[in-house]
Length: 560
Image (cartoon, rainbow, N blue to C red):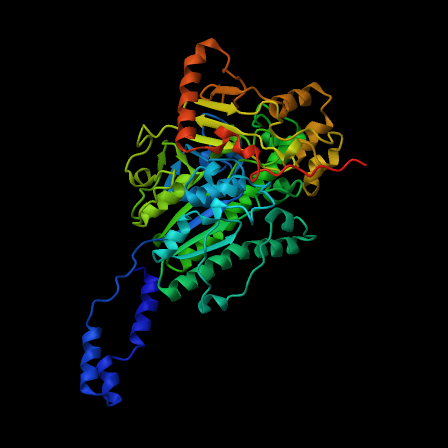
């Protein structure tokens, strides 16, 4: 039992009168007194010595943190200051090959909470486009096993805040209700509205108050209940929209310092650099918010009694080949874990892990059985190992994919189905419907305002690509060779198969799928991918995702 909970437990015990003393004072019959003494001598309920679990889950956070910078390869991570994220890596373990199962927040979270491939999560397989008749149609996702529920049923106080995952949360206690509720503020958007320096500082404090007080509330309830906690906090400030130039104004990230670091499939122009600078600023904001939670854990004496895990649900939004795709910019995830006394500090792990492996890992770390329904595999062995590098060389692939993101991105509200397998050397992608637009059809391509205005995303072209400065620049300049080449390369229709040697081609630009010398590699990876899809009974193999109840076609307008 940890120190805070032990103190509250001891106080509670001391406040209960001794059975003998109580009965003597109230002249109870001796036989009744004997029964009480005998009952009181039975063994006490075993205390729960398992660690607290803090899961910090950042919406749209790709693999961006200073700790991922490499002296051999200049990158955007060189420009980041993320002291709190870096601390978790420095005092714990950093995973170099973590990936999301699908680069779309709802499906990724469904996969995470169930430990299953997103395509087997019923309505959870889609972000936006669930059939209107799910209330009358069987919905497997709502009846699936969620790993936080298993933690709660085993004795954890389970809580969540902001955009997280499905499970039944423990009820708030009287102990935490005395703390005032704090509104959640979007860091860049809220702070950017300040008119003076004093107001700026006030708004920063108000933004940081939400994670700070939510952590306090959880700590109070955990102590009052004498239970370890499982707490998932899901900040959304890294999700668009961003306040233009907030990266430079709030965080001092000069857009032109990004020159030469932008992915090669995008024009390295000022507006694109501005967009990336704003994104990096929000990553630093997420780091600052996380830091307040570490401070609260430390002040409560619970920091070293807490397993901390941090990651994101998909890559950068609003950037071609980012969010909603299967390329590295979209699916590479940050993953760091700190667990004092269990995880050796300063280690790095090269083994491949999937975000859907987190549930099985936390269950095993909590001495709970992993349900057979889960496709995810625990990486507890990788956490507890003494060495860095490859722990299990056989753990050398992940399978990822996507279906539907924005419901009206294509004619008929149809998805864009992709499945992919990533290994240390290669990325193989299968595009099932090559006649469809990968990031949505180019509807209203003349409407440049909608391309940059997040509130008008439903009217914009390429709707699977969030509104952004990058998107607006590409469309506004689409008649130039620089922009048109990028648009065709990133948003144009794709071949049935793509194969990239990522060790030589980190931006995945040179498709090797039709080259004879790579035919054997392609065949092997395709076979490995299809084996996983068949074994997991992927509905895409029967095109089920193209039909109701997954997709409801738009109503046919009667002819006048």
